[in-house]
Amino acid sequence: MTDNIANKTLITLKHNMFNLIKLEDLAKELKTNINTIKTWRRRGDIPPYVFHKIGGTVYVKENVFRDWISGENHGSI
Image 1 (cartoon, rainbow, N blue to C red):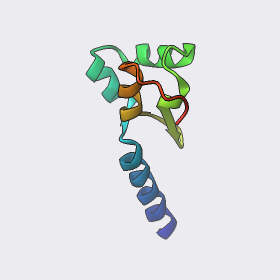
Image 2: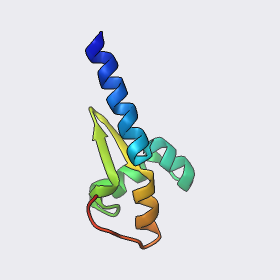
Image 3: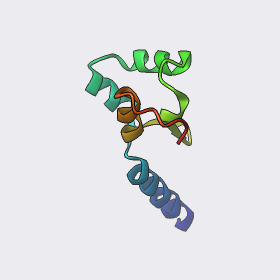
Image 4: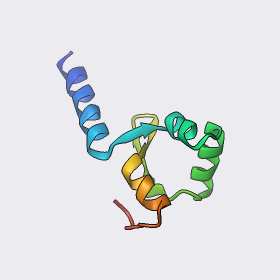
């Protein structure tokens, strides 16, 4: 039970630190299908450093994505 709480706390801290959003949320914001986001990720159209995987779930570092899309590419974060 304690390990489960610790894992959830760690995930919450990572969410807050990177301002993580789910792929579904990014797709809604961009008004596109989630499969399009997945394709862009797979093809490398969106750089890998924009994504963060926790367990089996892929998240987008929202602040990093916004910097990248606006041309403020700072390399790997």
